[in-house]
Image (cartoon, helix red, strand yellow):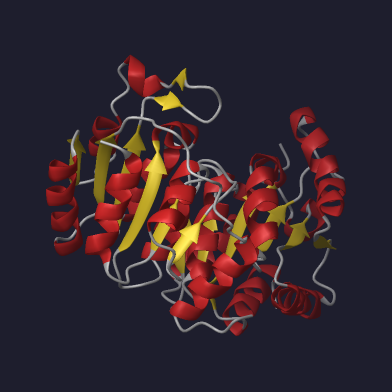
Length: 187
Length: 168
């Protein structure tokens, strides 16, 4: 499964729900798959993607989707425990797990050596979890996650491929557009 | 009015209803008030940079937020502030228990405590230091006003002289 085709598939189902995307290729590919006001692109703060999504989920009734990565989550595994503690029923975490730090030179990450992030989530009291290896299984579980109470934690095993051009994101504009879409004042 | 009540009142005045924090004994008197008040949602984070992420997420959906931490934890959160809050311009007030001042008993708290305000200066962030309750309502309220006007984090450093601190 390739992250870009999986991202395109998620966008076909997600409607207008907010997404937070992890730094680097996840953000780039989300932009190329479909730029929208409710994409909260990140391009720094490695490890905080799902923490940002947690803050959103505690502040809106809508479902919030985090597109995180294995290397990034390993940097902030405590965030999984915080999600388990808060139990936001409207939070859906999707972890693109390529078992490597691809952007830094394809060094193997801990998930290539037995670390099972789904089991970490389960042990942190996250009730709805899955690990999927293909597009069809991801589509089925993601549609369940949009319908059913969570929190959800879905590990999607992916293969790395060529990177797309860097997306022309601008953090201040990203935040401005995102807030406007929630009816917040621009400043 | 006691310092902890002043902070709670100021947060309410600025519609700041989500607070993310890492526990600290010296400022427990304010975070306990927040925890017991149904107006607030107090989110316990495992690490300070996580608290920054949670606060930014809340703000992104239109809910004002703040973080509470110790100066040692500010050290843990520098990259989150520098690579998320500043580029995106998020007005997140950072309430810090500033260690390493008069009365400090722990050698390990001195370097990060003393470095906290110079680091804030290097990042270009505004900060205020509270050593007593004199003028504190004006300072905290004014800090939150500035924070939102400037759309950048503001640090409010609370010293042992203010809160009595952890003495040993």
